[in-house]
Length: 195
Length: 324
Image (cartoon, rainbow over all chains, first blue to last red; front, side):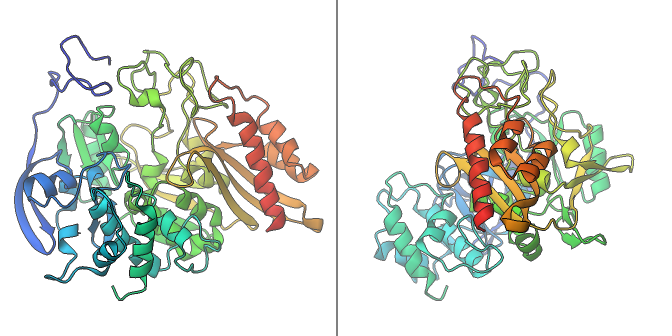
């Protein structure tokens, strides 16, 4: 498995040169619905939802951080549920309603979570912010549905959305600027508003 | 990522046929582990069978008073299910201790059962690994092996099973239900589902080629206090170094009258030793039970700490049960 002399791959990533038995890339016709708008695409079957959004539809609000589901920068909502768009294929989401950070505001009116992030200065460089905001929207829907978390004392009951709950539920979104205190404050604030 | 042919069959039978007919096919459900491995070319399927639209996403009561969990039930939905929260607390807690909200929304019951190891050397294609490239050797033995196994390992492989859910399913004595292309179906007890590495660490489960998981069945609820304690390197969103799933019933004076204990992070499969459970009930001593569980434990250098940590974690769990 070690990369050969002619390989130029990154350590751990062997050369992309195809082996003789590799199948040819498969192009798939695909209709994706993003922020209420349909997009007819023709994509390599390997295309992740993240790359489809950014590279093919041109919605670059969703960010690529680690591309391995470890940082949460690529978080989007699919049928209202937050997921890592880097760890799913576009082809798996034909017919699903995808919402990205670009689809949260109503015209010029920011989504309450967006407004709260500005009010509380919930970011520094801003790279993780679209993922944080989409994740927070999904997380608050989960909390309103009564889902417990790892820090919920009584998982059979309901938990108030304490700071500890917000931190645990948002642990899939990393912020290298460490704006966490203000992110928690923004979400705490927005949780009380009508979403 | 290597190219593959994407298929979306409309029935379990069609998926099983494709899985049997196509060489080097993989099923994709949540994809949270498989796509990660495909990007690194550790998994290189030539056919990818998308099973997400198959009708395997329901949780239903069984006539025996248990629960039948469809293969495609998402980890988040299973953890939020009212009966799981109330009657199978150890499972809800294990699920909630795993991954992140985003990943739990995608990851499925069957996919979690088949989750592959997080061994650094399995992930590093420039290093030998008997699991990834059978016969190439094991770089973890003699390497940096902090997250590796201390029980049931072999000269071929010291990888661990990274799942939290699987540990709880082992404590609950769950059963894995499967279907195959020939119309056959069978049930596999969780104890026999995951394998120890032996000389063939690339074979991780009792599934036969092409066999598809359709559901996981839970027996009727086990009475007692349900606990899942996970020790990890950060407070959230990290794999276990050691975990303990416990169901403890208390008798006179608060002493355990019945106990089930399963350990995560220690071995290639969830580790359960019924003799240790008996010792715990007879003696009331977590240390006596730990002595039995860890009798054959062996560290490989950087993971030596797991042996005393497993003992301390069991003590903490029993302390929590005593005060619950």
